[in-house]
Image (cartoon, rainbow, N blue to C red; front, side):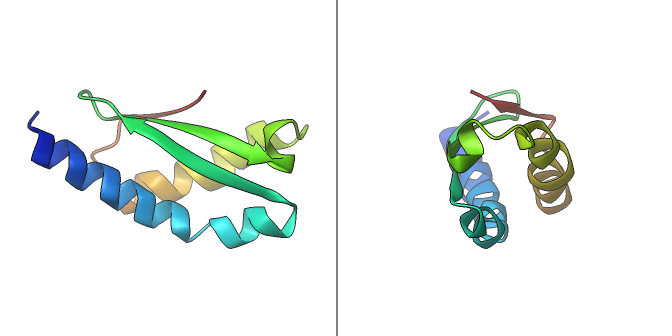
Length: 81
């Protein structure tokens, strides 16, 4: 995959995360996009209160993954790091 394609996916995933940041911020959290790999895996890091929240797995599955997959269907997997 070319750098242009990877950069485009990164930008599109980042834009999708912008739509959920306000919801995370209400609870004192945030999210950082670490990378989009060559095989279309997104690696993210939950920050602030979201990093150690007991509901973070649910946030990942019901919020983050769903938002990313809907906005960027090329993505194959979302991983928290």
